[in-house]
Amino acid sequence: MLNDLSSPLAFLLSRRSAKARDLVAPGPDPAALDTILSAAMRVPDHGKLAPWRFIVIEDRDRFAQTLLSLYLADRPGAGRLEREAMDAFARQAPALVAVVSLVRESHIPAWEQELSAGAAAFALLAAAHASGFAGSWLTGAAAYLPGMAEALGVPGGRIAGFLFIGTPSRPLEERPRPAASDVVLRFPSGSA
Image 1 (cartoon, rainbow, N blue to C red):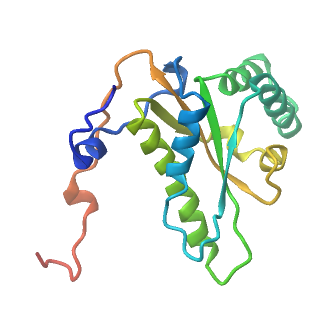
Image 2 (cartoon, helix red, strand yellow):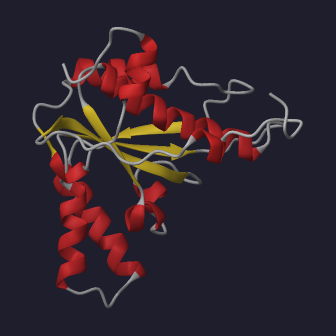
C-alpha cells in the first residue's frame, strides 16, 4: 500500500497528488471504484441535494474524440501540439472520473452547492488514497470548454475537475505547504 493508515490523522497528513501523466496500471477495478465513489458521496450536502455528478469515463477513445471536437469548436486554429495535448489528456491514468457541479433549484445557495461538489472531488481523491492508489485533480482547458458538461450527460453542469486515478510510476514528490502562520487566523485578532 502507498499510504500510512496507522491512524486517520497520519493518513490525511500523507495524502498528496500525483501527476496524471505518471499514473499507471493497476488502477481501481470496478468494485474498488464503486467503493471510492460511495465514499465521495458522503460529503457535507446542505439540503441533501447531491449537487454533483460523477461521470466514470470508460471509453477513452470516445472521450478523446469528444474533447478534441469541443476544443476545435472553441479554438478552430489549434495546431498539432494542442491537438496532441488534448488526446494525451484524455488517455492519462487507468481510471478517470469527471466531477460535475450541478447546482439545483433550491433555497440552498449555489455557493454551498458548489462547495459540496469540491468536497466530493476531494473525498474521491482521499478515498482513492485510502484504497492504495494515487490521484490527480485537473481542470485546464478540458474543464472549461463550452459544451463539456452536456457532452458528458449533465446539461447545466460545470466541470469541477477531472480526477485521474492509478498507481504512481515514480515516488510522489512532496510540495511546499503553506505555514500555518500564513493561513490560520484567529478571531478576534491577536487572541490565542
